[in-house]
Length: 218
Image 1 (tube, rainbow, N blue to C red):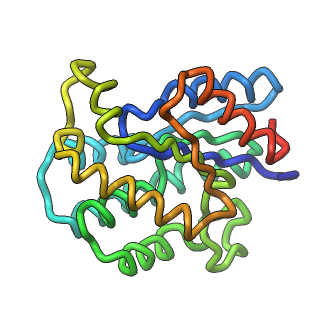
Image 2 (cartoon, rainbow, N blue to C red; image 1 turned 45 degrees about the vertical axis):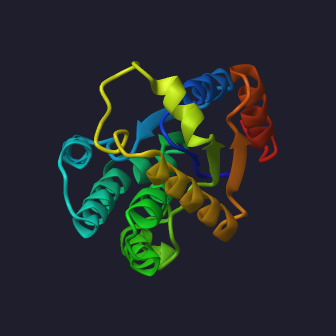
Image 3 (tube, rainbow, N blue to C red; image 1 turned 180 degrees about the vertical axis):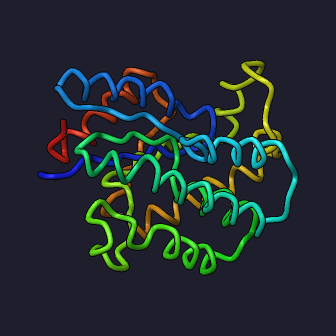
C-alpha cells in the first residue's frame, strides 16, 4: 500500500456491531501514527447526507433507491474518499457498494447485473491514480462482513432508537440481505472477510484485529 492510503469497509445489518469496531480500529491506526477518516454510506458528505435522509425516510421504488445510493456514493468518492486515499490516509467506511447489492439487489429484488453496471459507471476510473486508472473499479482493500442472524440483531437493537424504513422491514428482508452479502463474499473472496458477529465484543474484536494484521496493517 506504499504511496496511497488504506480503504476498509465494514458491512452487515444494523445491530451486528460495526460501529463499535470501526471506532476501535480507528484508534489502533491513529496510535500507529496514521491519519484516519471515519465515514459512512449513504452519507459522508453534505450532499450525500441529504440523500441519506431521503433514502432512510422516504418510500420509493427499487430503481430510484439504487440510483440515489450510487449518486450519493459518487459524491462521497469525489469529495472525500479519493482525496483521502491520495493523501495516504486510512478510510474506514460504515458500508459501501456491497450494501447496495445486499439491500437493493438481494432484499429489494433489483437486477444484480444492472447494479453491476451502475457500480462500473460510478466506481470505474475513480481510483487514487486519477484519470489514468481507466476502467478499474475503486473497491475497498478489505471488507469486513459482520455476519449476524437477523433475530439476534433485532434483539440487540430493541428499544435502542427509532427504526428507519429499512430497520422496520420483516425478518425475511434481513435474511435476504444476509444472502446478498454472502453472494458478494463469494464473488469477491480476495477482499471479503466474514466476521462471526455472534460472539462477545472481545471475540469479534480479536477477529477484526487478526484480519487487519493479516494484510500487514497498520
